[in-house]
Length: 476
Ligand code: GUN
Ligand code: FE
Image 1: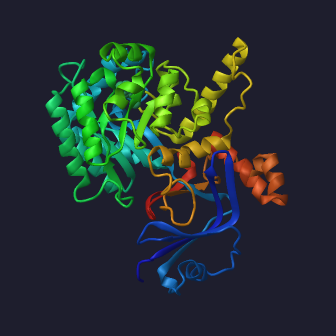
Image 2: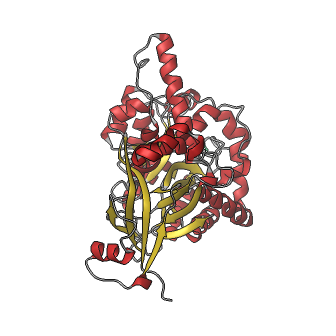
Image 3: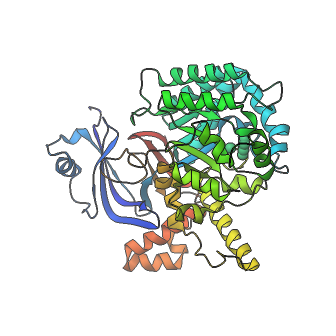
């Protein structure tokens, strides 16, 4: 039998095309062209009786042979949704996952992070650890992630190769640190810049940074202001421009970090202004945390089109604080979710959605109790959380027009979710009276309730298939 050229899914399709909008197509159909990895058509209401070849013919405007189409009929407990996007994580920090959350940021970096990351000088260690870390991220339904590696050129290339071989979409950054770093984990400015450029060329190969079909791309990665000299930041700004690359770093995570950064750059008006002045602030920049932002920080982030990676698990676990996501959204700043492993202990965007909900409610309650503005804000709901985990994340990664929803023309990075798996943490419909009732009368409303339960209850057992650009990269 010849290899299929098209995929067709029939059943429930759920996505969030805009913030707060949950689109449920309970009797939907969706087609994928495997040569482009893109969605060729979506039907809102389609009879299960319509042959898949007829659907593909309708979508591409020419007839196709039955053997060219592989069809998946989703069960009554399954739905199709966009892949989850982790806008901020550290691949080497899986080596001490769940440890050291008793320290604040700067002490935690010193005591745990730098020591563990320095071991990645050993390429054999990198190869084996990165293999299992990436498999774990994929198992959690993350189709696209922005990874930090370490300072080591070779091990970073191994990380990028590992991700490419696993079929995940990713940005991978060689971490740069040439100042205020321990002697065993530090580079010269020249090394930092030269190795970054070598890494960029090694990962890009003959590919172009703006080609959406290239799965793994380099990202310029100054660790954060305290560990980077002015020359290093400015050199990285020039490299980002020369190769048209995205940029990632940490911003306003912790009060001690901020005051040290401002001491290092006394002429700048804010933490954000340090990055902006070095040419690192633009629409392809991802800034993680943003917990303690001044008005000037927010204004510069907004003006420059920077995206924010909200990392609530890490912000709780390292006692960093709570980022004001509602304010970012009100300012029109793109917001996605990040796990920030190992500042955060969970390599799961489902966890990030829940932690984002908890952070938002804690902020509202503390303001209410203090009689402060925002004490009556509407809590961020499940639909908004799902948006941040998918379409919002895609915006932050600079690919909002290519990814994040189930629309014709977009890349098919997607999950099949099954609520009827062994030991499912999401109850089957018969155990949830409200869902059970709606299933008899209003299928779309039943799926809305089930999507909410997915956000708050599901885990990797429910993610039974993971696709990137049409390719199945994980299945249970
Ligand atoms: N700031 C600088 N480096 C790091 C890191 O590895 N994790 C977190 N959470 N913050 C940082
Ligand atoms: Fe981080």
